[in-house]
Amino acid sequence: MSDLTPRIVDTLLANGGENIRRYFQSPGNADRDVRIWGEKSEGNEEKVDKWIEDFKKKAYGGNLDHQEPWVTLVALYGLFGDQKDLDNRQHLESINYLLSDIFGKRHDKPAPPKFDRLVRSHMEVYLPENLKYRKYIQKEIFKDGPYHLYRDRKEKLEEKLEKENASFEGNTNLDCLISGESGDRKIHLFIEAKFLSDISKDITYVPVRNQIARNIDCAMWLMTKREEKDLDGLKDFWFLLLTPGIFRTEKYGGPVLSPIAPFGPQRSRLFC
Image (cartoon, rainbow, N blue to C red):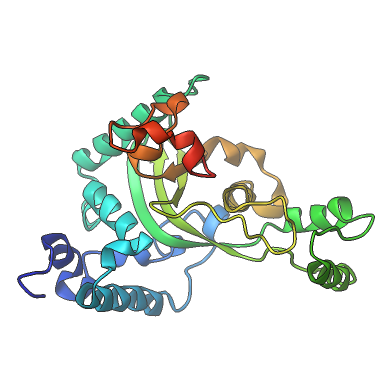
């Protein structure tokens, strides 16, 4: 790296990206909770190398700070470092303090998640399709035939509905996952990160869906052991939205003081 490269880039990409490698390894390679993630993912190291190389190219070519995964990674690195010493009390106290602060602003005030031990933080996590939702779409939403605002989509839906196992959404990727333990239970924080982008509303076949609803559905599908319907797993499921402070609504702490605060965060983003 040159003298003009920010120090955070030097730190995260040093030693061939070794400092960030653990963030892009699949949960199955770290968390032996087979109930959720199954066996180790094949070809995972190739995926890790691809992310590191992509960051390096953008670090030299500019606009690295415009890449949402990079900004998310910087935020996580500030909490967990290279993740080689997660037993360090400082990491544990930091995340528990943040979670207490976040959930303490809710009006219904549920007990916030609290880790006794951290397992790993992951980036770009693969979430398999919610098959229960697929069946629901086919048997309930479209039981009287396909509905869509566009004729071409409606025609494609008609073709799909003729197939017994047709997929309407497919798999999805989660921006970030933080896993740990509380007593004998495993806790998972599913996190969607949005910095200067908004949630995606461009769902192909069901016009009233959005990205956050889809992520939550897929996460719940995992936490309930998929087809086994273990609702007890929902006690260890948490969903968080990671965004800059200027987008915070009044109900959950209000915007930070800034030149654009008068515009109101509740009007500026769909997720508000």
